[in-house]
Length: 88
Image (cartoon, rainbow, N blue to C red; front, side):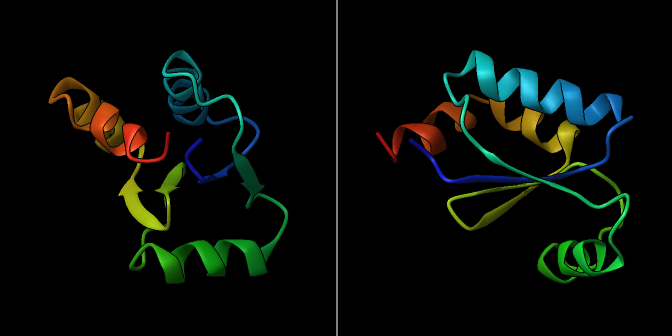
């Protein structure tokens, strides 16, 4: 199973969409970090993502994937399955 970290907020529809795609890909276990109530968590997210402030920010096996659109773009190119397969 891939090690997945997702920085989110509770009311973000893109966060829900990204998590749904990962679950459909069989990745039901991931670490979710809510940045809405923690400046420290948001600063950590920004530091790890190269300054990005928007959520979600997704990391798979330590690699920054990007946001929801980036995740779906990887999936449409068939690359998401390859990234997730590396961990099986």
